[in-house]
Image (cartoon, rainbow, N blue to C red):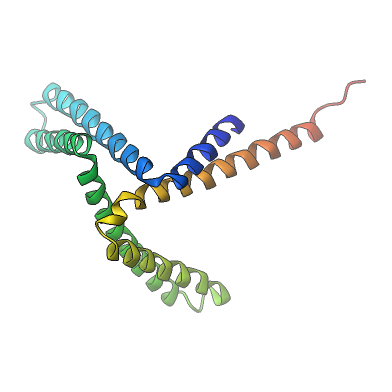
Length: 175
């Protein structure tokens, strides 16, 4: 966990420092994922061509291949599309978090406010990203992926260091 955590922290910091490059990298990576999954889907669809739902599986595979090609060939346009999806996600997540907080106001006593704040922050993020389009498409994905990698890597480092400490205290002592 330690090495992976360090790599994630370094990559996360790089993505935060230069988010446009990270955004393009994420877009191209997703393009490859769609392309490969579409090709695999196409192959398996033809292997099972007599199974029910052949045409739906074929359409799904072709759509994935097309999405992959578009993201890979035009990463800047792909980044704008992905940023629009991110905005929709933040709006839906924000509204749902606010509704959850308000609905559970009594059960969560003083803690419901954190969920409410989380929902409001989601809506603010959506508004900031939406208000800055298309410019925000250059940095939003890369910055958010960088923040995620930084925190994820930090958590892995903390787990690894804690495990080393725990192993040292629980290891059998030599006689």
